[in-house]
Image (cartoon, rainbow, N blue to C red; front, top):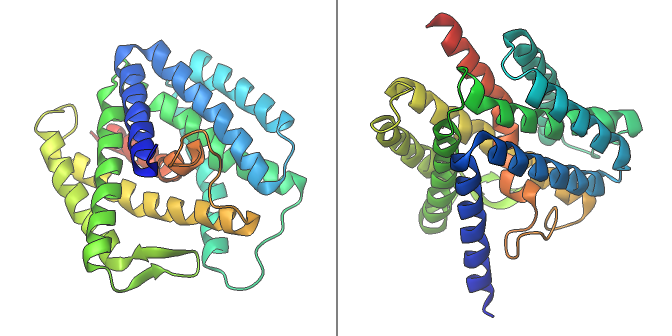
Length: 269
């Protein structure tokens, strides 16, 4: 079968599965992202050459405690946010630092897998409960915005891109593509705000900006991990698309900042 057809079918199945599980019930949503979490841990541990047993145990315990028993405690939410941000900021520093890539010991790798993979997935699972009752449309809106950014960043970059965004890590990404993705995602966020009224247009626009900026950085961070590991994709579970990390790298990097943004909005409103 043609590679483009395989890629298209794989992407369609992924989108249908994600939307169906998210919209059907909170249980199906949590199960799907619990499965995504397990696969992402396996892929990341393979990238950094870390035994998967301890991270997997940490993920299961975290999923049970914060995803089930402690669903919407503001203090725990803030602690999870801060813990994740304290891990991802050094990843950004390492991304833009020239020279030999940082060599981490086992403890360092465990810290990274916790803050970069495990906690962001827990925050995604907690996000639709942030105002109490399960609201799947905040997840749907988030993914629509990310897909809009990916689509238009590719289209604009392909047709108008001349200036490289960060050639050393991701040679195909351009400044024009980033700008095009941002503009069209902001437009999409305003359109979404006319249907999903639980957030104001300005909050949706803020959501779009956070997702595009930090999502783009997250894509570069994962590309950096893959470049150091010497691989093209984090996995092969999705033919033509790679692994779960390849599909969700932007979301998991942006989610701590987005979750914190929503907590601030809820606090001041």
